[in-house]
Image 1 (cartoon, one colour):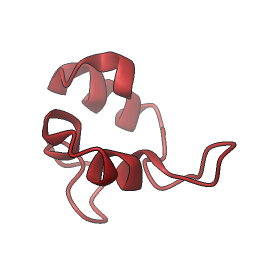
Image 2: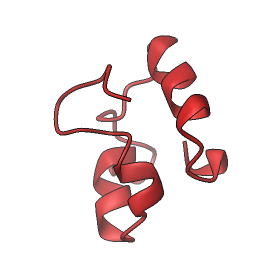
Image 3: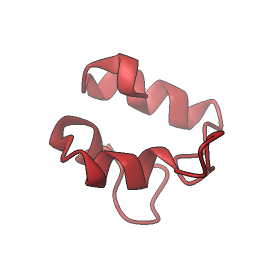
Image 4: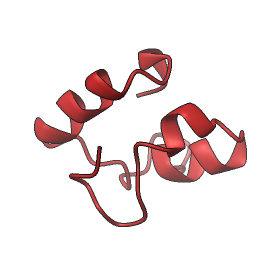
Length: 55
C-alpha cells in the first residue's frame, strides 16, 4: 500500500483484491497502524477505521 504513493485507485484495487490493511507485517505492524504512526495521511485517508471498502 505504501508503494501506491497515496493513489486512491491503487489502494482501492488492493482492498478489492482482498488485501487486509489490518494484517500485521513481519514486524508485527499493520498498514493501517503504520499509516497512523508515520502520519501518512495520503494512505490513511483511504483506510477508514474498520471499513475495507471505503474510497
